[in-house]
Length: 441
Ligand code: HGY
Ligand code: MN
Ligand code: MN
Image 1 (cartoon, protein in one colour):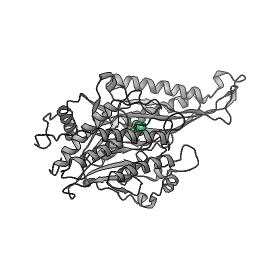
Image 2: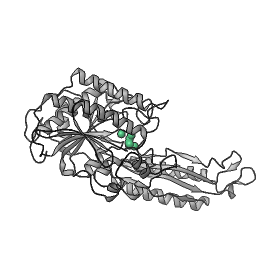
Image 3: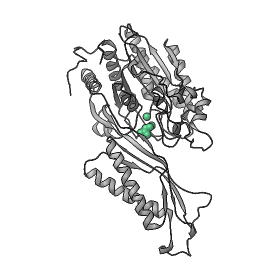
Image 4: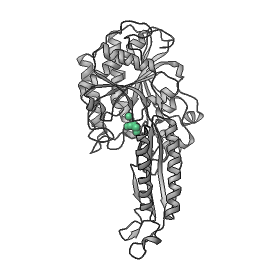
């Protein structure tokens, strides 16, 4: 990979640093977001819900106060713009999502949005850049609120929302994504038309800062990661196993069709395939994050006739995802035959894996080196909006921030010193890209 600290022959990367007031402002905004979204345990910013909208309105107030133009698009994403000297050139963009999982952490998504605002404020003070710089605060990245599909705000940008998305049931079972979008003022008809809200050619590149959400940067003792690729995922939001309810004392094992035992049998088989595939060097993670018997009928003295569970698997390799899907189906058939049960896998939601642009990886590495920031080049196990931008043809890159205690939990932590180092890497890369008039970065 090109290690030279340059971008299309541009030898010197512009210096970029955050002033103390901009650092303090970032801390203030993140603190206010946390206060506004505290749910008694952690942070909840509900996809297309009032708590997510409140976060967007808070961000808008800071962007306006900093003197930027802001725009709400048809999906109620918020775009913050700093015009360049040649505004007809393709823009340099950054951003991330503002929603969170229920009882989650404050930094998943929000750190990237606030880093983008900080970069724009610093760039405005520094002056002279050719390309406009934009921050996209995106709605609905998480799958947690609507069971499987995700990346609603970023996919809306490129006209990629589907009927299944709009009809996705909210986790409370009382409304759909469409209902929730309408409640925020989104132009659902326009989103349903499939007309892109953003022409990929409008962007010269997309760079997203995000917390790592995993343990690697902590283990490597490095503050920053440069991302090479993002796993795709295959989500069965609700698999149901239908067996036969029975008296727990009166029915012998050989006459039972126990739904929970059948599910357990399937999970052990799936786990064994996972273990073998990893030994063969495949990239794969498998999770069942939700398991529930029917609370209206389940009992200690009742053999469960029905159980539902979520099943998600992720890989950087689309073929691995597709072949694992076939394995899951064949194991369902075998367990069904053996135990006299039936599995309903439902309609899966698939998000494609994505690779980051080599030029963006090289640029981010060059900036890390020019700023003497220790960094790890690594893949992302978690999904990100950057995969949508990359698969839409926008040259994309990601900067990871070391963060302790993982993510998708209220203990999610991040050191501000790491956040500032990563933000200065993001800013240096964005400024280099914005100062470069080459057609293709
Ligand atoms: O689920 C994910 O990978 C992301 O954190 N939404
Ligand atoms: Mn995220
Ligand atoms: Mn997340």
